[in-house]
Length: 326
Image (cartoon, rainbow, N blue to C red; front, side):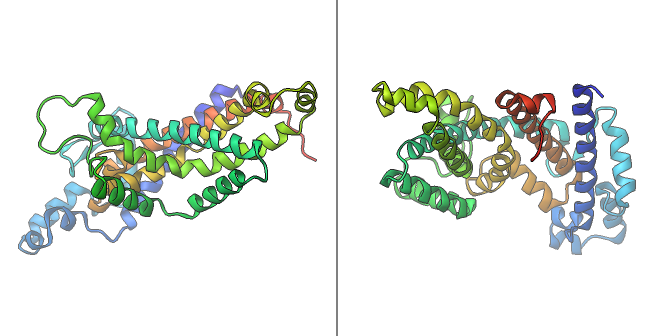
């Protein structure tokens, strides 16, 4: 089977599995979508007929496979359903929220890669030094720190105490008119910085190990024998062999960035895809939750595909499928 066709088949199977599992999880949830969205007081005062009508509208009484099959037929015609929680088509809600998260996710992805690469190179080039121990210790600490706790700490220190950044949202509260890019960037800066820290540790530690390998290579020893400084060796000989592996790992970490955005957006009240997913989950809005799950699955699949292609560049045997074990 040709490689592009294999990729298409895998993507199709992934999207079908994600949609089915999402419907199953929503159906297994103890949350009553009718009661969650109309409120407990209004729910208790409703007539049984009104409750049944709302339950039918939310699809609460249908089986998992029946509901998924009906959704799949509509999805094949380009209709992903209607979000009763946001009172809009799912495609419109996902597109709007994804556009809101794009700046946050892209900034966090770039920051985590650049910071992880820089720290890894510095630590590897100065193996055993105090800087190396500090970087490794900081990376281990980041790996063990919950993202939501780090977000709340950053919000408390930099927004509440110091007042350097807004306390939340993607623009000023009550603002009218168009929002400038500078204002959006100001609101996204702190959440993006916190979100970027989730991927720094892996990139930094991986780059450190690669740097150690490069610094012990024969061509580096030859460069030292010619009198080149350590800085020149790292810049001229090291970076060209370290950037591509770090970028490959960074592409594979797209799922971690997206997963962390759910918690970060909740803490900072950032109106993105992650916050919409929480709203849909708590409200039992299955069509919207499926649409968000499919969008994130596409992003993760694209990241993994890019990582696999870069692996083929790093090691041509992987590209040709000729990797031998042993």
